[in-house]
Image (cartoon, rainbow, N blue to C red):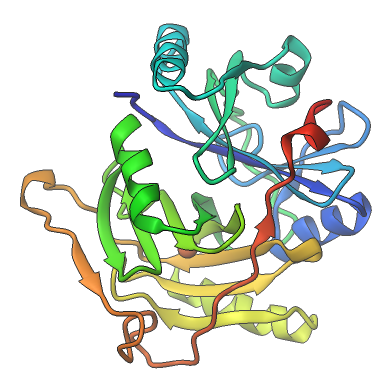
Length: 298
Ligand SMILES: [Fe+2]
């Protein structure tokens, strides 16, 4: 079993890098790290050097990154995945440098989502110089698409330390790798892709202040503000450039007592199963996965 210690980053291809960076900084509020390589923008939200890398090129998700404890853990993961018939590729030195990790491996889940396992993601101690005060405290979770969320759970729980926290029928599987209710989720979707990237904010007031800010700036609100009954988080989903959905949320449940937690199942058709406040719900936009051939250089 491969132990994921944390989520690490999302790497996303964009045809208009300037526009995507403007949105990530001026609207979402992230810090743009000092540029060190042409065509790549690193965005920071917490102690990580970056949690979002925008790469100039074809539009689509390049990879979703997760951390493992150390080099031995990475080598063991490589062996385990290969033994189960998954093709694993070692990242080059340059690609690892661009990700600000010591080493990484890349592979696809059974549905075509490109995943990367990394070791020694760089930490930056300097406080984050947020571009605006959205109240962001950290990169909270990422959510992938798969046509069958139960099959997806078999993959995540079979190979990794991911445990289901709650099911939303056949529509979603919310998984934890630590006490946070979900750091990873899989939503039902025909094509592989990134359903959304979440940032936690400090207070419920931040969610509502951000909502007004986004509306004033003509940003498309996809869903919310509302409250998920599973995680109890107050959420707001909004659409960034090139089909990339961002989420702010506050108040995610922590599962401190592993032994006593029983995953629950919510029927998505039941009013209140997505939003306890009974607001309008809709499937948010997914940024589709780039085919690996198109992402080889990065
Ligand atoms: Fe979310």
